[in-house]
Length: 334
Image (cartoon, rainbow, N blue to C red):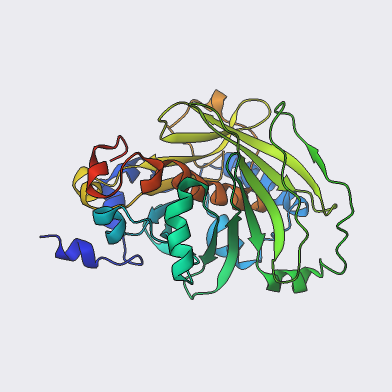
């Protein structure tokens, strides 16, 4: 009975799931006239403040979408043995068409062992690919006991195009701006041509029971200057992670959705909806007065995509629960 489910690949179509499952509220976007035009104008006006430009592959394939769906791949050793494997994700539009995928780098037995030891604190590198297997964005997190930092990098070819790293100035003083109070600060790292361009980062702001993140964009005019554009402050056991702007209005968000009880009971598949566009992603979900007038630029969307990966690692992986393997089926998120 489970043979077709087990053999189901990461890259298969999920249009039926989206029609009948939790995505039914994501209807195809209708032309809303002046509102859509105004949103596109706001988006275009913010291009100059972004490292990622509209012609970059990550923009044309993923970040230009107002809403995307991320689905974690089936992990059989994770399910039956509680063994944390390298994560793989499919990226789809709201109609179920695959527009890319993400895969954690996993090159050695040693890294697989350290993954079990470090658990939620483990470092990782996740590459974002287009449908032809080209790396279009890289997401990195270093080891951290608390307040983990997850960073989004444009791949090296974009550096050559922009002629950005002519000379690294590691002695430049780091500057950051935030209208959200006393929050953790971004970590400055010296770039090399092999790293790519750091476009921003998301910082987990530890709290005993709330789920908090601080989202920063790197300023294009300074090597070590960051500006905070959003904050996530979700309640205990929350499945919704709205991004609030400095006016405490929703500018974007990440939601954790069930695919179906039977499927998630026997697999480790997680599905997330990433809402990039405040004007087009929240129809009939929140009252209009709760929605921000701002629209995320491409760098900010890349950071939110990285944040969605961090949410999956921090709260919905096998190691984010008390038990592993079959013993963890009683977890609240199954």
